[in-house]
Length: 245
Image (cartoon, rainbow, N blue to C red; front, side, top):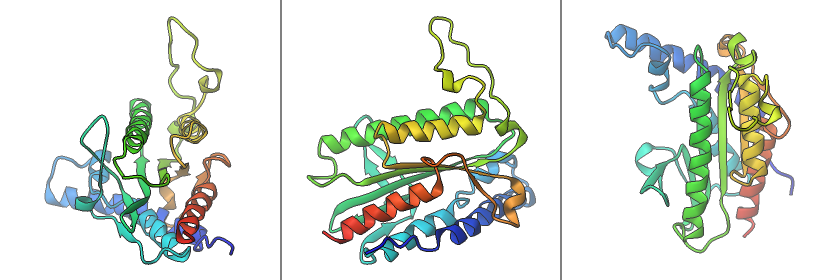
């Protein structure tokens, strides 16, 4: 039976429009309320910018034979035990018959600052994966097959994110050549590729989208391995395999 990708391209465009629209609405609401957190951070802390992509994940679960699974998206039910820390909060959890089927984390990064925040995102993604798989090894989720673990990031496609990032200095040993003169978008792409190649995530995706996409839903993949289609196909395949158990 072929995988059902749930018309993901159209839904991803709608999710992208919602991403930018929700950011703008959050910013306007904070300004109207007279709060001080009215910058880019204020838009992020609204907490619903990636809801369209969460809805796409849910549609994929239903479309690939696991409609009776429990899908969690509310903050109170999104924590999983960790190994190096008590718990970790995810964005979507799929649980079937008390088995963890999938855990997905979604991030976004909008300018004007890209340098330090990009490094922080990388550290978070790597640390989360290491913590998760160590907890899995030690039986935190019971004796079960490996779940799908996904990481998806929406990055602003802008002049600053496409120009070469700040030169990373390493006094004692050379930086890996692929990072030299790489833009911040390219660094996110490299991060996703390496996260998958090192088996830290089942799939990882970088989407680049300009602010003007609020009316068009425009987004761009950075490479085949970190593309949305690869992420969606991998997730749908895992769900279908779980449904066939």
